[in-house]
Image (cartoon, rainbow, N blue to C red):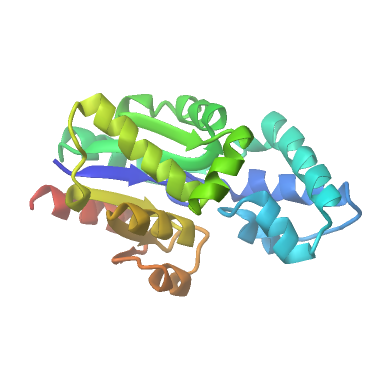
Length: 232
């Protein structure tokens, strides 16, 4: 039985609007005005602290202020400013009911955010595990291990699935599907298959660079790919 782990943003849901508008608002609180939210899509995926520093060379104080502002808007408005990709719910349903797969969703969003989204779109019945990122209190541990936030989320997801199944999850039968380098990197660290979707917010060249074994260009193509796995 194949185990398939899905990223959320840019894989299951079109969530750019809520994230970029919240980033736009956060930037305004530290005196940076960005009129075009389309210029902020690179904030989808990486940790905010990294993106703020890399893009604007912010001071630590401004980064903390911007992150707080982002969270304030995102929790109250931005989280649900998203939509499922067309066809994705049918894909999830058939993956479970027709293809006999075990599914999980692993996201850098917090646990509470991810559970709210999955519940909002009535997708709970499709996932054996719903796993978000660790709380900030565990940040020192992430730094100590040298693993990215997403790599740790994927590792935790597999552990939770093993606890649920009562047996080891076989790496050669496990697939990570996501749209960014962090998904590909995390899959590589866990020794599982990496599947990059180009319909999300990452770049094809980056997905290839970070080890995507397969590239998928649409939800329909992803459906066909999962069907092919079910017949192996």
